[in-house]
Amino acid sequence: MEKTNAGGQIGVFDAAFLGVGAMVGAGIFALLGEAGAIAGSAVWLSFLIAGVIALLQGYSFAKLGTRYPSQGGTIEFLVQGFGNGHVTGVVSWLFYVVGQVITVMVALSFGSYAGTLFFGEDVSPEATKLLALVIIAVMALLNLQANREGVARVQTAIVWVVIAILGGFAFITIRHAEWSLLSPENYPPFRSIISSVALTFFAFLGFAVVAFSAGDMKDPRRDLPKAMYLSLIITTVLYVAIAIGVYGMLPLEEVIAAGETAIAKAAEPILGSAGFVIMTIVACFSTSSAVNSQFFATNGVIAYLTRIGQFPPVLGNGAGKNGNVGVVLSTIFVSVLTLLFDLSAIASIGSAVALVIFMMVGIAHLRLIKETGANRLIIYLSILTVVVTLVVFAVETLSQEPATALAIVIYLVLSVIADALWRAIPFLKGGDAGTSLSNDLEPMTD
Image (cartoon, rainbow, N blue to C red; front, side):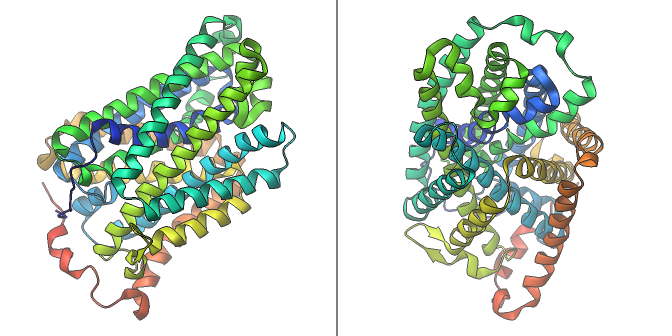
């Protein structure tokens, strides 16, 4: 197992709020309208089902994290399950791409809200993308310059504010909801609701960030499970409550039309223009904290992957006071994706690839189950629910979006090529980088 330099500085709430910040920013603000186009007013049910699936994954991650505490998080689990070879390498590139996709998505959501706040509802796409680039640059600099404890503390402060205001928003909107808008008579077929789960599950992907804080905890065996479950429970309750409130305040057509700003729109009937402004500001804080969480994870995972020889060593070279070259290149990569893609395409691509990654983590866990002491039935359920969601998503959604399906296939192929190619180029390979750790990272078997 990798020996980390755990400073013991990140506590349960710090780690949990890193996850909440990553999930809430990547989810409820960015996807509420998108999910409604598939699940109709049953979006709250879609979020609930996705939350249950995420909790099953969270159980697996918590068991793995307490057995293998590391700043490598998800990748450490793959290394332990499959060894430090090509399988882990390919999935690592996929994981890296998903992290950047999440960053793009929440940055675009920030741009939409900030643009509406500064320029009104007729904000241009160019202005939205420009603001997205600004928040990417700011959060990248924070993670390059600040230490990990400082980043976690900033995140905790932001998320406390976001949870308090969103909780108040959910309470008020549910009290004033028009329940006929939420009638099951208006729900689409159940297969459509299940299909939307792949999209709403994307809103929970930030929970994996919690696993990356294990190496910074004083007692990860005790604190990591608490942080994992706390982050998922808080997020699921918020998502379901807000979805009920929004779809109980606005007709389905208005929610879909509002897109990323649906929550702010739902506040207007009760609180007027002030409500719209308040929720827009909260959305800006929430999405910016999500960008922060993703860069926090990117910094850690790149450092880890270069140490074990899965990424080019040059990416692990220092940049700023506490960052690395990988974060700098990731900032450029994320900025390019922000300019090229829109929100819905990003979410669909990220969802499908992330489901594949979680399936692989589940399989790795089965190979390690005697080491982790996990309940085998729960691990099987965690894999089954992900596979079912992926299959339904492929049949219901990707069959109608050939461009998205092609992009996913391209990502898979590029990950295989990236894993093989960099190892074959001498100046990228950097000699025997990662060799010293290889013997410590052999896969555990039953």
